[in-house]
Figure 1 (tube, rainbow, N blue to C red):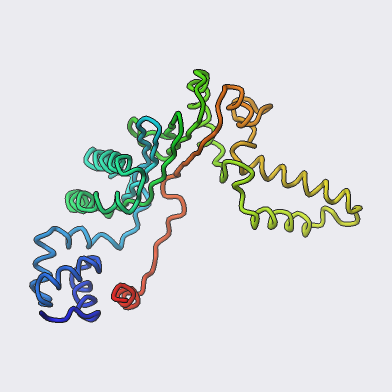
Figure 2 (cartoon, rainbow, N blue to C red; figure 1 turned 30 degrees about the vertical axis):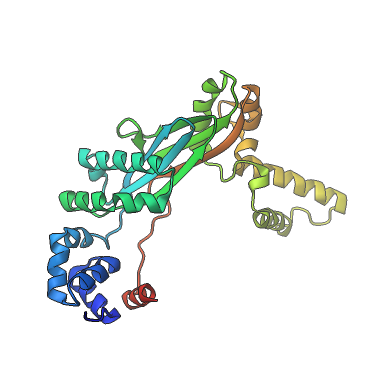
Length: 289
C-alpha cells in the first residue's frame, strides 16, 4: 500500500476542498491515487459539500428540545437568513437537535452522528452549514424560550433553564425565568460560579478608576463591596433583579415558588462568529502528528 503523506493529503485537499480527514480516508481507500481518491470523494458527495466549507456561516437557527428532566440548546448555522426559512434546513435543525437530546448533549457524538445529514443538506441547498454548539441542562423541571421565533421552537435566541423542586408553582415561574434569561443574558448562575479572576479584575478596575482616591480604608472596602454587588446583579442569574418584578431577585422569585435553580443555557444566533484564516500546511501537519 502506498504511503499517505502530508503532501498527498494537502494536494488532494487543494484539488477538492474536502476536509483533511476525508482526504486522508479517500487516499487510504484508493492506495494513494490522487485521481481515484478525488472520484471517491465525489461519489460520496463530499466534494460538493466541502467546496462550501470556507464560507462564513453566521445565520441559521437556534432551537431548544427537551424530554423529562433534560433539555438541549442547539445552534446550527448557515450562510443566509434565506436558508433559515428553508423547510429542509429547518428539518435538519430539528433532526440534529433530537439527536443531541438522544445523546445527552454530547457535542462530539452528535456531530459524528449527523455529519452525513449536514453534508447531504449542503449539497442539496448549496450553502455552507455547520453544527456550531450544543448545551444541556438537567433538573426536576426544564423550561424553554425562543426569541424571534421563525417557526415554532426555532429562532435567534434559545434558552433552557432547569429548576429543582416539586411545588406546582414552579410551572408558573419557570417559563418566565427562561424569558428573563433571554432578556438579561447572565454569565453565571450563582455567585460561587463566578471566576475569582473576574472578581479581582472588577475590583482592580474600580479602584484604578480613581473613585476611591483619598477615602479611608474602611470606606474603600465598603465601596468595593458595593461595586461587586452591582457586578453580581448584572452578571449572576440568581442575583439579577427579576425582569417582571425588579424589587425581587431571580433567586427570591424562584424560592418563593418552592424551587431552586439547577442550571441554564442560552445561545444567541451567530454571536462571536468570525472568519478564520487557517494555514493549510500547518493544519495538515497537525493532523498527521
